[in-house]
Length: 85
Image (tube, rainbow, N blue to C red; front, side, top):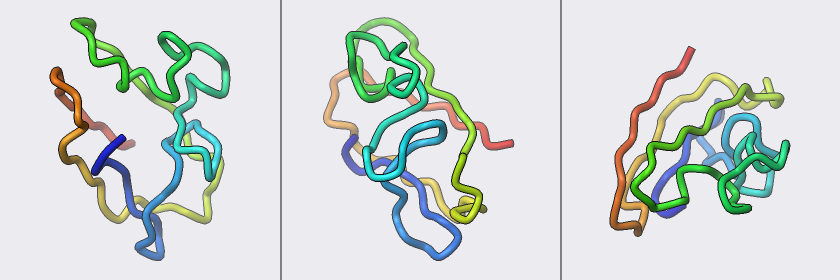
C-alpha cells in the first residue's frame, strides 16, 4: 500500500484500514483470513479481477475520517472506488 491511506480525527495517518487491526496495515479480510492469496488486503492482488475491501472501524476515537489519500499503488492494474457511510 504505497501512498494510500486515511487521516484520523487528529490528522495522523491511520496504520490500518477499516476492519483491520491498528498497527498492522491490514484490512478486515486479513482478520477473518479471507484475503485473496493471504495478502493483507484484497486490493493488493494486482490481477485482472475486481476485488473489494470493506469493513467498519472498531477504533471510534480515530473517527471521523478527515482525508482519504490515494496515490500510486505501485501496481500495474489499479482502480479505486471509495464509499464512506
